[in-house]
Image (cartoon, rainbow, N blue to C red; front, top):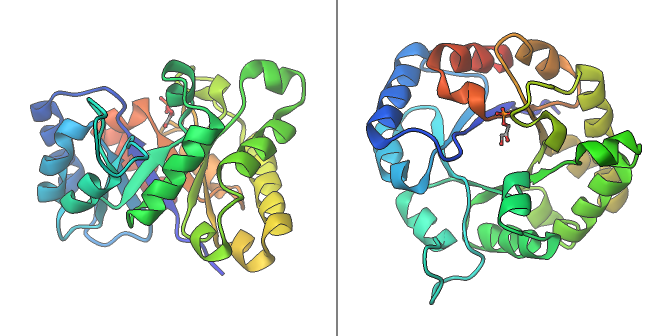
Length: 252
Ligand code: 13P
């Protein structure tokens, strides 16, 4: 079956409210009303209400970059999935390497967030991917397999098929060192095969696996043409409307 591509923007900690509003309006003006793919925007929490109001009724879907696994309580500074759901947020990124490295999120914490996101009625965009050291030691498959096993393979088939997976090699994030389409395809196929072994071919055929790491307007089309790459999770290049629209058009 054909998998609908997704182009998701991870703004990270960038843009003020007015800068974000301007960018969303530029995207709305520049994109065709009907798109063959899903466009997802994940701005900072402070921008989510505005995003939801601006994109309501359009083909852009709102996403959060982060959440807490607990439903409510004394967790100063944190945001629950129920809060995101009450705003109309559809996706939540989890397992991003920046959260793992800078905020010490382990596979166990990511696993509990995947559960919380699903229970709260949102779709997790689960990120995995290896560091440069691991790739240079040719251990990337084993490393990513372990992330899958420890963060998402506990899910039953009905919950698992709701996930979106993003393969984001750490060495390609924000470095300009994009994975080649061959490197991306090889890992995406490995992830799909690993899912087939853990679940079945229906699930592995339908699950969407995005690539992330230095996607730009000039490399998006060749990456998205790889048969097991179902779109992208875009950081830096999602902050420039013209370039991001080009990236979206490469997928749609
Ligand atoms: P860049 O596109 O800036 O490399 O970031 C990728 C990323 O981390 C998306 O989540």
